[in-house]
Image (cartoon, rainbow, N blue to C red; front, side):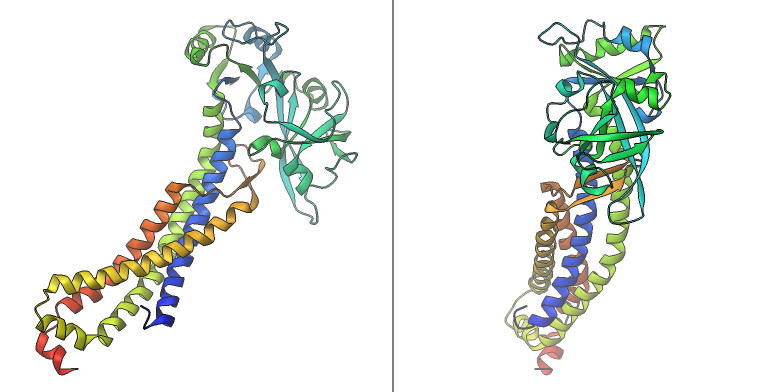
Length: 377
């Protein structure tokens, strides 16, 4: 490999690019899943309308919400009030900064308990909106990417002008890509008669099954309850599955070229070492020893390319991207995420490419006739 530095570099570089492309797309899917799952809490439950796939499609009436907050499984705050947030979720269309393109953005009408149920939300600038007012606060992802989303700026939607009074950070969660305001004021502005969901803190996180059974059997309620982390995991399934399928398809296409490159390199290695192969065979080395030597060289070539590809992909973890969540059709900002499983998959794929590229040349070297090989010396 060192004797043929340029050929080795080009072959390993081709494999590295294939592994980089594979890892980057899988990291996208992993980052999306992590962002949405981290948005939920194991101790929280979410109640939405039966058969609804997201809060945007759901509707929970005021009467149903009142019944839900009186359930015995609901935890209480220090003042003895139920830790329940009745929320409204709507999509609006906003223009991005620096371009004429638009994207759907999630508007979330919150209740006083919403902040207590989501302790990861921190106010970075300004203040929280006053209840009943035309004031909003925006997540860091919204403030960074959309027009008029800075503090003291105004965003127009639902036939009203809404003043941005604060910017909040929700860490690595989907809430950083939302706009928050008062739920009752949003219901009035969007002419809605029902909440989208009811979020509650469980007195005992293990008591979800009892709560779900009671809600399902109550004829007054047309709702279903899910653990919040389960709900958000389901929100990521469609988009994450699409990204993984896309990554696998592209990788298989690109890998054909990488395998052909490895095969050419290994065939050249066999051709350049014909005399050496003949000498080894004459000294008593078995065919399997020759086969193993060339396969190990090919695997080393693949491992080198795989390591370089994974190393390049790891640099993407500092990059924030946005995409449309196919479940809610709202834009979601998240980061690439490199997990040990992705590193393992990338390295395994690189080794398989090396093995596929080196197998036929290795078999040719092992089956070479001793006399013919020595004559070419």
